[in-house]
Amino acid sequence: MKTRLLTIIALLFLVPAVHAADIPVAATSEKGEADTIKRTFTVRPGGEIVLDLDRGSVKVRTVRGNEVHLVFERNVTGVDEDNIKEFLERHELDIRQSGDRIFVDSRFEEEDRRWGRSRSRTGSKFKLDVTVLVPEQYSIDFQNGAGNIEIEDLTGNITGITGAGNVLVSRISGSVDVTSGAGNVEVFHVDGRLAARSGAGNIVIREIAGRLEAHTGAGDVEVYLTRQPRGDSDLSSGAGNVTVYLDPGLAVKVEAHSSLGSAKTDFDLPVSGKWMSKSFEGILNGGGPALVLNSGVGNVSLRRN
Image (tube, rainbow, N blue to C red; front, top):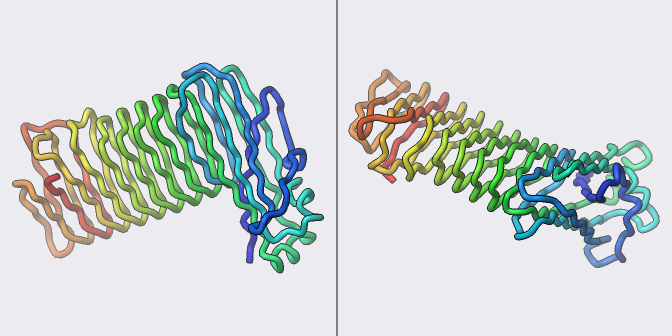
């Protein structure tokens, strides 16, 4: 069984690089070798943390004050005690801080012949959970090869991509642009522009006021619009359903189309089309920003919220 070794992140103020082997490993528990690493930075609100990881799961929360706190919980199983240090040395971190910006680059050297057979036999595994606490006014820029991302309660901008994992973003005052290559994306309560994408996963969006873009290659798109949009909304799925729950009092210009599927609406908009290609369009409450729904293979629906 191929080993999955998630990223270890350790931030050291003004230290350009650190190796995992430099950090002591805790005593063996019934679940394997486990330890917790903590780091704290003094910053000013309005800064940014940039995470460039090849793997790992990350949770970002806010705290009052002018500090960034980082907690890394890691667990190693299936590795002999004598080999743990060498196992961790394969992970390299490049850590830099410039003003109120923190940069983290994390890479793990892939297994070689020396490790391949023994790790497969023993089922060795490395699990990492990272918690990042930042000031309430702070921005996040992340790139992650594999792992879930959760970000909540920020005044700032969020930009990032995870290759394989779910993305959850909620209660953000600022712009959000997030992508998952293979995973679900959920975004709640964003006061700003939102772009949400998934290569293969579902997208769920609630309480958005700014311009909205949501696209998935294979999955459903579900959007709840309860506030008057300040910009156009463009929603699409290559293979999946696109459903919008719309407050009846909102003013929008609707365009909905399914290339291979059905089209349904609770509003007074006529549905047209031949065979399995269906569409509807029209103006609600005098018109406003565009609300566009598209599905390649799937249904499009506009429901009363």
